[in-house]
Image 1 (spheres, rainbow, N blue to C red):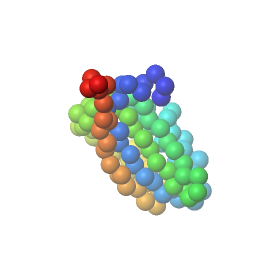
Image 2 (cartoon, rainbow, N blue to C red; image 1 turned 60 degrees about the vertical axis):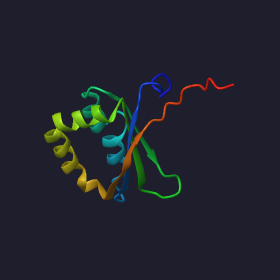
Image 3 (tube, one colour; image 1 turned 90 degrees about the horizontal axis):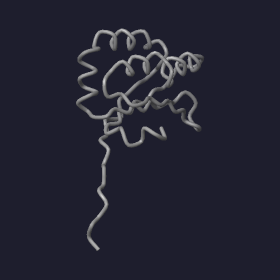
Image 4 (cartoon, helix red, strand yellow; image 1 turned 30 degrees about the vertical axis):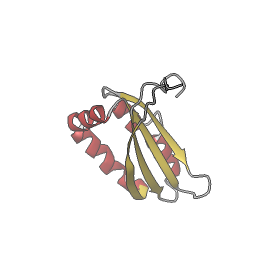
Amino acid sequence: MQGDSEKWGYLLIWEFRVQRGSQSDFERIYGPEGEWARLFQSGTGHVQTELIRDAEQPGRYLTLDYWTSPEDYMRFRQLNAERYQQIDKNCERLTDEERQIGGFERINEEPSTDD
């Protein structure tokens, strides 16, 4: 996310426990070139999607979805609710658990002028 690091202002994090034997399908669908990322890329304000795998707990993954603002994400969800639900329903077979960890706003600190 080298060049895009200044663009995002909102990060949505989800945790997944993937069913044994479904990891490769999960990684393909949820990865940065997968079905979810392609859907998000159709929305204004989407910056990047990352998929990370727990090094110590097999089958545990996090998705990191970077947006320019919470408003852009919410607008995207409203405009794409039907397709979002369709993909979500199709992916239920891959996971034992999923939970939204949260939506996080970036803190942009201005350089201090106090000397």
